Image (cartoon, rainbow, N blue to C red; front, side, top):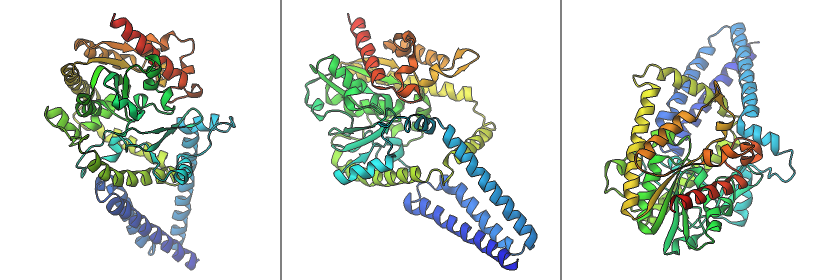
Length: 451
């Protein structure tokens, strides 16, 4: 019994020290100390476990064994919860419902397809967005991925969307930058980027078909972009080309992304200084050298996270920490309604600046409202949960005399089954048919507005 008691204490202490070493490695070596605040919680947990481990040497044997049994039972329970959340998680549920039911569905994980393609092309990369590549020590903010690279995006339709990035790191055929006049210049998030379909099936790809490639179309959308990044993109790239129309693709989470962007020390300069620029185009080679190291670091972290997400209790920790944040947010002086008003105020300011910039470049700005899957599946008291937010956004845009094209009203609302425009009728981005009809709706509405 004494040997078992001693082994338990040594095991506790060894685990606690290993946890502390791992937290130190992730915080101070892997992230170079830039995310210390994030890892502070884990430092605290590790130190508390070490204190408990030392104390366990002096705890009576029976009590120690009982405590161990309780802790092991709790740990098993937590992993059962993680397993339940994994199965119920919309992404994993989507995979389980479709991946194994269809023999043509690409069953590889992101890590597996990356490793497979790396054998064919050593320069292949995974699509990563600007906010994931930026930290407090960054001296630049990337508005795109790496240039001239085979880029792996995502899988929702049974295959991984893969594209060759253009000279500036966006999802375009590179020759589009050589065209004298650009018919459509797109900014937006993953829907503009063309998530989970191949380039010809994206909104920009379908627009090229509709204009029969008689003019240029540039898609500068990037996954997880928000309003401020989109404005920064216009500032850096719009003056370079002669552009007829700018399409601003708006999605439901853009205001949430804006809140994070306003805390970025580089991005906020675009809002506060009309002359600020990172000179991204002229500094392309310099920035790419810096970006290469950051992307490799972030890529490893992302693939590592995917591979060990279950072991690390990713979903359970996410729920616990979200609940803690919500609890402590009740003690703040700024209410959710006040935050929403502040977001809308900043959104209006940014859009006003964007419209002015567009007009100064002799272009016309169109605002495109894109609906989400939840709009057709989640309702509170019979009311469309996005209606209020979209109504407020529409009022702001129309007050600035910017034409609004509401894809919900112009397309999805008219469909017998709007979910048929999503992958396997499940949560995600649009499928090939969805993107095609969205592009056609945008094109037809603009034709009608310009008559």
